[in-house]
Image (cartoon, rainbow, N blue to C red; front, side, top):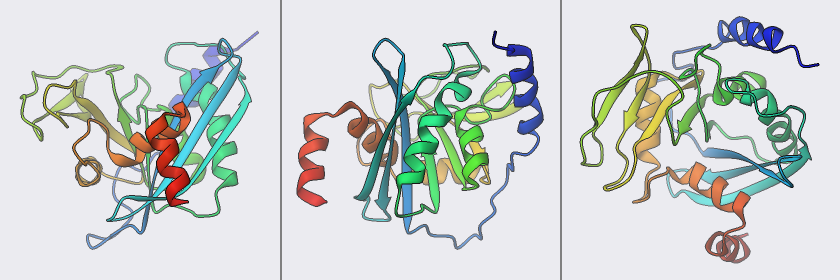
Length: 225
């Protein structure tokens, strides 16, 4: 029997450990930025995590790892990070490089208890982490302009929990939030500096492509690594 009440309480307690400001200086320039993505296989019984490390500012792929683990928890709304982090940790432990900044495909503090997967995993690995989600989990926002770069604050009960960013024309916006050890201004700054004409920033675009074994990413990996 899964004690969902205890897991939610753990989220509340751990959310208080999340650092919501930059731990780096104003002149910080990362050498390596990673992207992380999680999916599920075999009717959800296997969790697949991919982490891609890109060199900045060229945004060329320098390393990637994929890990598959048995799924430890069924899908429970609001508790997805407990389902995803074991596979992410398994992929992280296989890396030979350590990124200076991490972007996770999912929510950071833009979560009902302010502890989505980007915050959960960021806290575990103790790296500045940004949540880059493709959909809204909670909060409200005004309409976002159609031009790339348009944005609106994402608000929940009077608190700003993220920024809604139009990253590309004719695409749904992204939901950017603090993961850990980064401010919302820096989160937006680095996401925008990792965009190359696609909806997703390159780190999570690569992680998603590698995890999905898409032909373009597979060919590029074989060519470059």
